Image 1: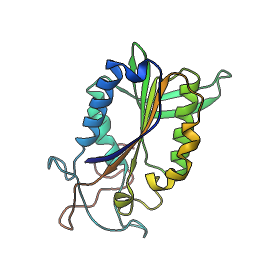
Image 2: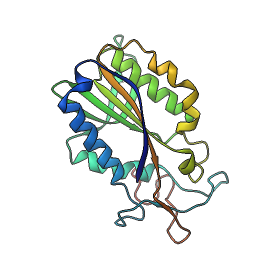
Image 3: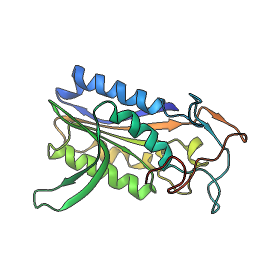
Image 4: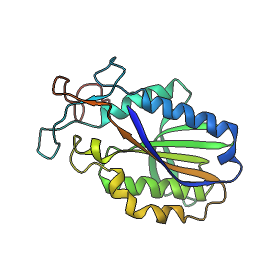
Length: 202
């Protein structure tokens, strides 16, 4: 998997410049890059079919699950739930890592662009409240997006709103978007399964 862009929306305070964050960030990026298709190929090759029609294109959740497996070996946990002061749930994030400087979170987008907005809002709110020290949202590039489930959240549709998240009055923390893309295209590889097929556990 290629990591083609990292958009840093917030990077402020001691933790953002710490060795610990730099180490965790590097390991997270390596886990993302380690995702391959077909399994064991060490490259991410996409079946180049549009996902606009029902039953066509490639799924997304199996891609996420391979990254999650990598993070679990590094001590991360999955599906951490967050709530506000009144105990109203904010929902969960895909993976979190507890460090001596606070919790770090990662969300791999598998829903539509509205889901991406909710994820970034949740992360920003948790940063404001001190529930998170750093958070990363992983989304496909425009080039990869066209081969995935139709309307999947993607970086191009988030770009017009980036200044909104940059303006969050956070005094200590990190909020980033990681943009991913395939290495190759080939009609000779299988399509990535959708739903509960294949390697997906969701």
